Length: 79
Image (cartoon, rainbow, N blue to C red; front, side, top):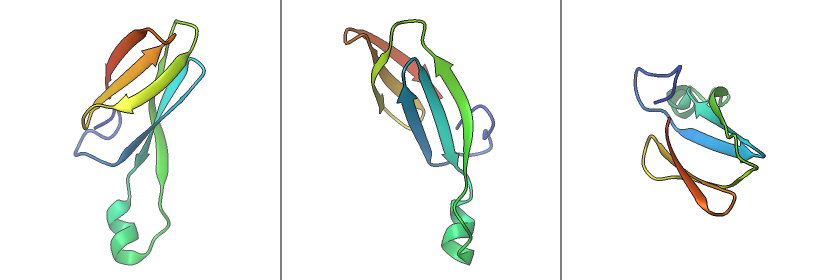
């Protein structure tokens, strides 16, 4: 779940660059599979790190992000 899409779980991508992590939500998966509609991804939720840069970003579970900052600090974020 994300800040906007709270009704159920959706496929999510986390994109990290510089000091920012942005979430993208693939919210019309059922229509694409059943009706052949175009896939839609909406940007939703972000995190700006006060450190120098984000080195790596991984999902630990459905709603938990593991972020490695400055090659030595770990941040755990709940989407």
